[in-house]
Amino acid sequence: ETGVTQSPTHLIKTRGQQVTLRCSSQSGHNTVSWYQQALGQGPQFIFQYYREEENGRGNFPPRFSGLQFPNYSSELNVNALELDDSALYLCASSQQGVGNQPQHFGDGTRLSIL
Amino acid sequence: GNSVTQMEGPVTLSEEAFLTINCTYTATGYPSLFWYVQYPGEGLQLLLKATKADDKGSNKGFEATYRKETTSFHLEKGSVQVSDSAVYFCAGERGFQKLVFGTGTRLLVSP
Image 1 (tube, rainbow over the protein chains, first blue to last red):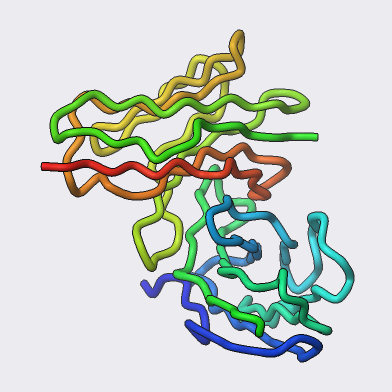
Image 2 (cartoon, rainbow over the protein chains, first blue to last red):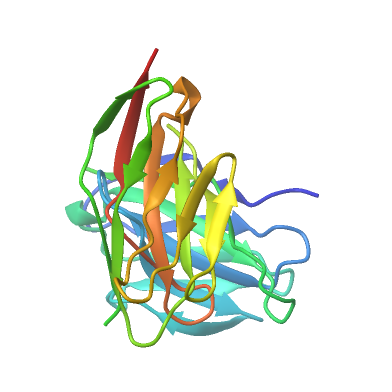
């Protein structure tokens, strides 16, 4: 059973650029949640995808968008990058409808904006 | 809205000392509560959880009890090890698997 994998592990961009981060959910998991963790802070919920549909969103602007694919993997897209977008982006997967199963987190993508 | 407050770190202890990291939550209703641990360069690992009042979560010698009357979920361990050095996050669930995290507490354990 493979865990949650994220790519790339590190990324450097400049202000105004666009970025796509990828997440492969754990086998059998149909729900993916994305979090932003700024340096020295706790993770902040960005949004969640369940069966390819957005299923809840945190307090993030529309330039943060996402997708979930039929195999339940997911992408996080951020447009018009700002310096404050520098953070560790974490993906977590879980299985809805199967008891009280915990989320499993990937190791994250560290995004640096210059 | 929901929020989680945890004690600021770093918490510095000697090996075999007793650990307490405080966590209080503000929420509508009684959400499930969690403690996650983050080792350097890694993602979050679930340490323990409690889904209702008076539940006690425990794992690897760590434990926390869901106290409805004080809205708290303090993390405790009777005897810490150097390998417990990490950042610990308290979290509450706002809807299915949508977590609200505290700011984290860094634990440093010296030999």
